[in-house]
Image 1 (cartoon, rainbow, N blue to C red):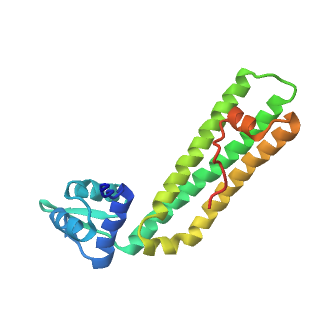
Image 2: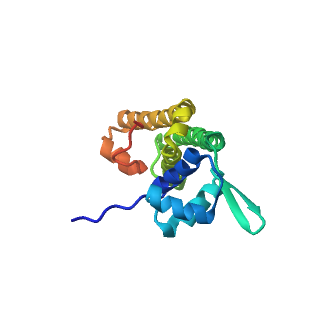
Image 3: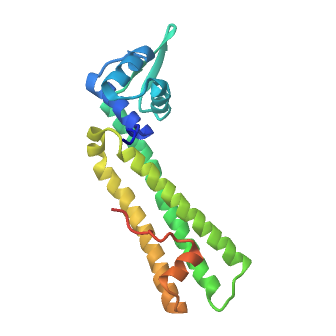
Length: 205
């Protein structure tokens, strides 16, 4: 028999947020350490770290009174924190798209009638960095979409802006590939290798 797969960090975070949202109560760490393993399947050893990660992301409020720390979180607070994070990530996606578009134009100009140069190599490295940045931003967006289902439902409209920005960024990559195929008669595999584009690069679902 295969071993039961443990919860991921995001699953633990989401389940811990459910404790606060369902009870709308204030807890001490010792309370969470009792409730989380019993009702949400979060391992006792990870409770403190998961709770601290939520505090660090402003998902859970923490206040020290006397010698004890008290923790609480309400849906409105979590929604506000996620909207701020989503706005920040959407802005980064938009900026990355603009930099990538500018870089593509420069690469196309540099390739006209020229062999490989240091400038082109530098541009290709930056292009690869932007591609990796896009993947990291998408991972961040996915992380915040996977949290509390009730809050995610309220955020769907906000997510549209970020998805449109990522789709336009992806359009530019495909446009560059199309131009390169026509200009130099390269096939897709040659272009992907030259620019470091992953084989599974495609639009978001």
